[in-house]
Amino acid sequence: MLRLGFPVIGVTDLDRAAGFWSAALRLTVSEEWASAGWRTLTGPDGVRVLGLMHSRSAPQARPRVHLDLFVDSTDEQTAEVARLVGLGAILPDWDDYPADPDFVVLADPDGNVFCVVDLSRAPSSG
Image 1 (tube, rainbow, N blue to C red):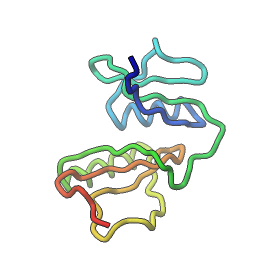
Image 2: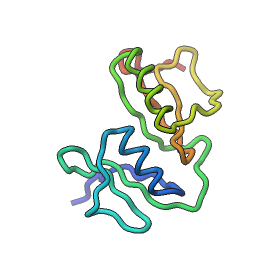
Image 3: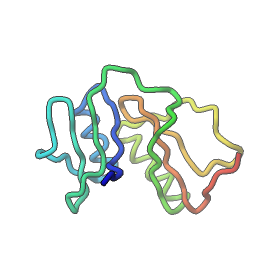
């Protein structure tokens, strides 16, 4: 039976990406599910949550698929954006925000964009 697995992010530096995403999402790098070109991040219950795959290609500036990370309030969004930037995330130049966005666009240290969405204000109009 076909099942949905988990998202996989292509990265050029697996160790840096594993450090960032495990700290960002409070996950653990699984030793059981690792290889020279792969890292699997698991939750506290051991469930595989995110895959990191070595890639030689550059990240897309405007990917069609990306991660949305959820928070419950504007204050939490502000705090999490600051925490993620402290971990190495970048605030990219993003000129495509709607008038009153409920999300902030960030990029991981490899340049892969993702959003931090404030669910108390979702969905954005526009």
